[in-house]
Every structure is written in C-alpha cells, then in structure tokens.
Amino acid sequence: MTVFILRRLLSIMVTFFIVSVLIFVMMHAIKGGPFDAGDMPMPPAVRDRIMAKYGLDQPIYVQYLKYMWGVLRLDFGVPFQSPGETVLELIGRAWVPSLVLGGLGVLIGAPLGILLGMAAALRRNTWVDYLASAVATLGLTIPVFVTSMLLILVFAVWLAWLPASGWGEPKKWILPIIAYATIPMATYARYTRSAMLDTLNKPFVTVLRAKGLSERRILFQHVLRNSSIPMVTVFLPMFIGTATGSIFVEAMFRVPGLGAYFVSSIRTRDYPLEMALMLMLTVMFCLAYLLSDILYAWLNPRIRVGGRKG
Amino acid sequence: MTVTSATPTPTPTPTYRQRGPLWFAWRRFVANKGAVVAGAVLAVIMVMAIIAPFITKAGPNAQDFLTDSLAAPSATYWFGVDDLGRDFFTRIIYGARVSLTIGFAAATFSVLIGIPLGALAGYYEGWVDWVIMRVIEIFSVVPPLLAAMLLGALTRGGFLTIVVISALFGWVQVCLLVRAQIKAFKEKEFVRAAQALGASPGYVIRRHLIPNSISPIIVGFVLAIPLAMMLEASLSFLGIGVPPPTPSWGQMINTGMSFMYFYWHMAVFPTAALAITVLATTLFGDGLRDALDPTMKGR
Image (cartoon, rainbow over all chains, first blue to last red; front, top):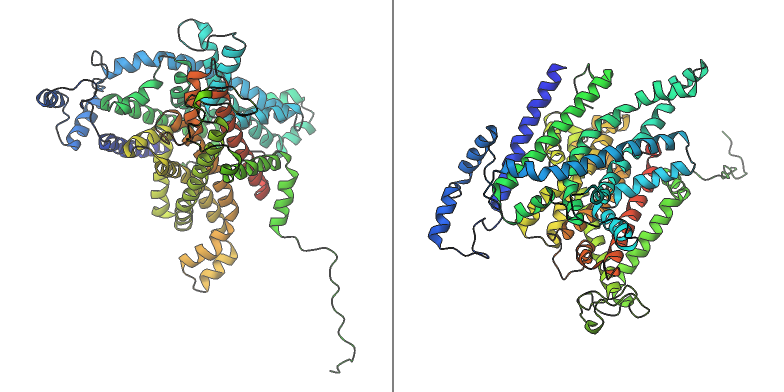
C-alpha cells in the first residue's frame, strides 16, 4: 500500500511539473502584457520600471523558476489587478462565497441524488426510475449557465419569489445553491442507480434472500455497502469541479466569488493570480484523484494486492 | 460412381434469414423510444440548419428590422427581434449551423486523434502505453474549461480554434474506448493467426483490430458531439468563443441575460435551443451505445 501511494505521488509530481510548465509558457505566450497602454497610458520608462519591479523583463525560465521557488514557500506573488494584497489573501477572501455555495450545493445535491438513484434501482422501470434517468440526463447534459438562466427566469422574473442575484442574506443563496446542486444530484443519481443494479444482480444477494434475511437488512448491510465504492471515489473530483462551475454560476447570479477571477486574470494578463488559480486547481484535482484511488483500494481489498490502479 | 440423371436437389432455402449483428443493434435501437425521438429531433434540427436560407426571412446578421427592435414573438417574427434589429428565429436557426458544425468537426478530429493513439496504446502496451496514459492523465487533471480559456486567449478565439480545443479534450474518451477494445481483441485467435502468417502490426491493426472496434468508435464519435457543443457555448458565453456577429447560442444567452427582465424571448429561445440540441444528441448517443454494446445498458 505504501509503495502504491508513493508511486502515485511520484507520478502526480511529474504530471504537476509538466502541467505547471505548460500553463506558465502558454500564459506568457498570449500577446500583450499586464501593463500595456490601455485605458491608462504611461511613459515607456515608467512601464519598464514596473516590468522590472515584477521581474517581467527577465527570460521566461528565470521567471518560472522564481515563481515556483516562491510557490514552495507559499508565496504566490501580488495580483496586478489589486496590488494592495497578496494573491493568497485575494483567493482566501474570494473563495468564501464560492466555497459556501458550492459546498452547500454538493451537500444538498449528493444525498438527493443517492436517494433518487436508490429508489430508481429498487423500483426499476417505474416512474421513479424514469424520473431519476431524466434528472441524471438533464443535469449532466445541460450546461450550468442554462440551468441558472431557467431558474432566474422562473423563480425571479416570472414568479418573483426569490432575488435573482447578489450575495449576503441567505435568501439570495437559494437559487445559486440549486443551480450548483443539479450537477452532483445528476451524477449521484446515475452512479448510484447503476452501482446498485450491479450489486443487486450478484449471486450473493440471491443467497442472502434464500437464507431468509429481510430485504431491509440485505439492502442496508450488504447491497449499499458493496455499491458504495463508485459513490465514494467520485465525490472529491466532483466537489473540486464546483470551482469550475463557479465561473458560470457566479457570473449568472452576480456572486462576488472566485469565478470571475478565472476570466479576468486571463483577460488582464494577471500572471501571478492566473498561475496561482491554475496551480491550485491542478493540485486539488491531482490530490482528489490520489485520495480517491487510496479510498478505492481501502474499500476494495481485491485491488490492494496488485498495487496497480484500475 | 454413377451420375443420376435427376438434377441434384437444391438445398432448401431456409425460411429464416441469417441476421447480422448490425440488424440486432438496429432492432435494439428502434426499441428504445427515447433514443428514436432524440434522433428524430436531431434530424429535424440538422435539416433546418442545412436549409436555413430558405426558411428564414433575412440573413443572420442583417439588421433589417431596426424599427421593430426587441419586438416580442408574433406571427411576423416567430421568436421576436433582438436588440440590434435582427430576426431572432433566423439567428437561432443559424446558431444551429454553428453549433452542429463545431460539434461534428470536433468529434471528427477527436476520432482522428483518438483512434491511432488508442490503437498504439492498446496494441504495444509497454512504454508506448505508459507515455500515452501519462498524456491522458495530464488532460484529466487540468480542468478543460480553464485550459480552453487559456488556449482561446492565446489564439484569439474563432471558429477553428474552438474545434481544435474541443478535439484536444475530446480525443481522450475515444482513445480510452479504442484502447480497451483493442486490448480485448489482441489475444483472439484470428489476430494470432494473422500474426503467425506474417502480417505486420500495422496491417493487423488496420485490417483486424480497428474494424472490430467500430462500435466504440461510433459511440465515442457521437458522444463527443454534445461535449464540443457545450464547450463552444460555454466559451462563447464567456465572450472568448465564436466572435460576434456570427450567431452562437452561448453568446445569445449572455446577451439575453441583460434583457431578460423585460424581453424574455432574448433569453428563453437560445437557452431552449442549446438545451434541446445537446439533450437530443446525448440521448441519441446513449441509445446508440446501448444498441451497439448491450452489456453497457443502463450505465
């Protein structure tokens, strides 16, 4: 098991290194710089001094090494678009709304999806099953900004029950949380249904029935436990995926979260912030996959021996 | 051995026909009502996109109705008029052209990249497989949308860029499907026989392994279409996709946001168009997958 984790860690570090170089090079290859003459033209001498202050006049590999050296000491630099704080402070401040909305969305959506998937698997080919399939397909195919748009149109514009946008009082949270929740709900409805159907068709369930165990105990003690593996492994990547979803949900509901910075940092060539955001997401995805693999191995003793991930 | 004068009795023609696997796949597909309906809807959308100039009253970018700007849907303007005096029905129909073209083009490129790489990884295993799998791992830890945003900014957006970006993230799925199929078929007797007769790896892959992977390839192709369409809409929504005035649903949804309180048609029609098209393509693809590979049913 230790060898397995170490090998995966090494592989992740290689992946992370390649990704960080790719992103850094791509980011700097985009035409234009952060201090180009736009709305506020400045004399070339001033511009050169600012560029030198942030080290932007050096060759790109020097910039990369300097930045990554800073990252190792948790120094992500200063965002050009708001020089009064560090990148870390900015992310910490902007992440709160994203985390609250995304987290609540997942915490509400995932259990609903699991219940729906269970109901669908137990009552196959009834209306519950069709409902679950409809929810799963709709949630996974319709882009989240379309869902948000429909929610705003129905509940804010036509029915006028809830405010359409903003942040602050919890009443304004309801619509964005619903928009966020559709994705985990759909994902879990789908995974739970197929995992439970898989388990229910296994011979050991027939044996349990034959020996006279009650349906309830079969369901909760055996079937649920055996079909929980895909449900556990899908959780972390999905949770982190809400960060990408935040770009759209927050734009639709005008939430002052992290989402807007993904777009604005690219648009204004805000290299330190852009790099920090991309690295953060990449690291979290890497760790989420690693943790999922470990959890998977821990829950499923059969793959522990080989040490090779499935 | 004497030859009898009578003509040899012909073997009686069997009353049943030999059914090929495609026939069974077709039967399974037709039995799936949702997939058939989705296919029909998709066909209607495709036909409308193709004959667009004949069913619309003006060009997609013609500002012919400026006096009626933002008019609500009526008998004259089926979907109303947008803020710049363009017939909205026309814009939506031409939007289907953009969306479908990008979807199909991206899926084609995904397949073109995915098949050879999947075949190589599946056939050779070893270090070739290792390298290709590491590349796939890189693509799986970078959120596609963010990478697409970077690439879009790098190449200044545009039609072709979006196709390339979608293909760049779409080939992974095709590659994995083909790889799995080829791994499964590599050890079969007919492949062994071909190898024993001296067939080169290239020949075996081309003549035996890829034809046997045709159903995962079809499935991968069809399921790559909605993903590309969604990516296009997302990027256009963020303003880094297909540049205006080319009609794109994502772009129209973004514009519609600012108008939706008073001019609901600006938001509703592009939203519905995108949702219906993506949904129809996905259901059609799911139906095809279930029909071509019955063991995967219900996943």
